[in-house]
Image: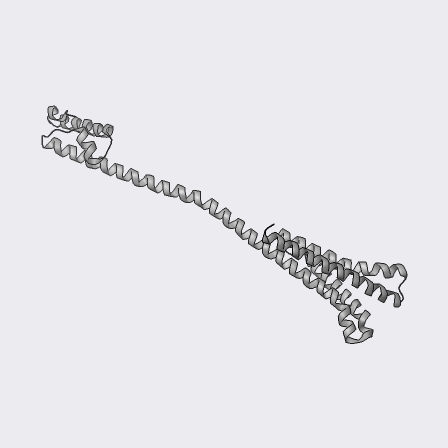
Length: 225
């Protein structure tokens, strides 16, 4: 188990423990408060579940939204705020008869739960943003590399074609100058000096031979290879 999984497990366990403590203590406080304020036994047992259950339901909706990477529904925020206010008020009201210390101690479990829940939700959102950023960055690099490679190959091919065309042009000019000077045009020499293929050199020699024959050249000298 790596550090991330261990940290996530510890965080989850902590939130669950705090939630369980808050739920039990809050249930006792609200149920007793309901009884002494005229509620029936059944209503007193169900009232804490409706209040703290709304806290849990709203928190779970917010957590699911964080994991899915979507915005938190406004109703979940409203329900969480309202139910937290209700459970805090009920718990503080239960301990208010014992003074400030009693009110603070009675209200602390509910406050601790909401603090831990918000920290857990915030952590999930940060992890989600980091994961999304890494995935996006990886996809961008993966999409860019082939495009960059194709562009480089195209540029290299263009440069090679230009160099080849330049070499062929230079070889052709050299062959024409030799023909005009009455010197033999040798395909092997053209290929070696201008770094072109033997086949291309022979084509150049043949073309220059045809030009020279048409303009009174000396075929005997041009025919050498």
